[in-house]
Image 1 (spheres, rainbow over the protein chains, first blue to last red):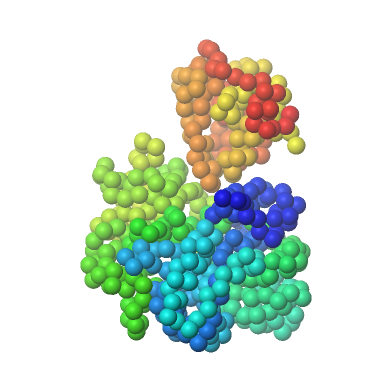
Image 2 (cartoon, rainbow over the protein chains, first blue to last red; image 1 turned 135 degrees about the vertical axis):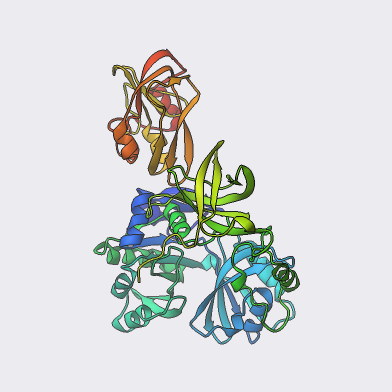
Length: 373
Length: 126
């Protein structure tokens, strides 16, 4: 597969980024130190290029009804200007992707899937549109996404906006979005993120991305904002207990094991893809009384658990780690793992097989890190 | 930018060996430190441990990953750098200086590369 580059690639090169492949995209992994970047987002702000994420416009008279059928949530019920976290599942309940859906108008939605999944999600969404009066358009190739994340994000956004737009944007509630003009460029600004901090995501046209990035970089400097790569994005989302597709979420697992049962609107009217299978799993108690469940683990020693390491209870494997690393904010190892439901209560003492040596971990409630409001 | 220090010798596994020091000192190269990411925890062999060249003798844990530390020589560990154990970031900040890992009484050496060969092989700069 040919490597894809975001519209901001030259900016990242100028800033001395190390790159990594993510879903076929060459993305900044870090600029200097991923720990410094992590700390900047927790204490000040970080600037991210997330242009590898997909963007799909769903428009037409039946846009809401169609999304209710295609996804597991009730998207027809979200108000214009609001966003909702949702999932697209297979008929058997397996997760194809997690995504955020923005309602931009009565008959106008934008769906944001993960980078590596965007082509699959677009194909599924297109197929599921049959019979609906709706248009599904993949605009990922024309759209860039820049995020400003951290406790100083609102102040930085104000510097990028007119007084009027500044009030509008900083007045946004979490999971809301509005159109705004960012240094002369039209943008959709959402108060969303994947870091556990306050923050904004700016969807802009590719041709405006470099100007918006440069303006944000300049505006954030006095607040201690620095450009941040995917390495710290991963450690930030892990501390915030947020799942990552490919690690915690997959086609082999359903929302119930992932602790995302609340995202599935079984009470909504009409059929939706996966309904029968998901109803059955819920009735069977999957993720609550049977099977496995995603839990947080806190390391009691210093060595970190990593993806795919076996989780043991009294010497017997009862699960597997999906993500893990030393938490930069908390100072001890943290991990997400699927474990047998009988071992999923906070306080349960387990071991993780760290390359042949068991190390003590304890089940803890998620998230690991919660910002002070 | 120089990331391979001249005068040292290097293993294929990115450890450096300084035999001008007595006893010889071992650390990891700046190339390795950079690709590991920020080092947050070290598992080093204990003083008195018998090392075998090419065999894992510890772990280097970064935010992103964990990798084995391989002994570049056969011999006995004489001292470990307590400072780097307390502050593993020294591996990133000063891999050839304050970020040294342990010193060893060398019995025999494993296969080692000159700084020039190591740099050429790993795209490093002297």
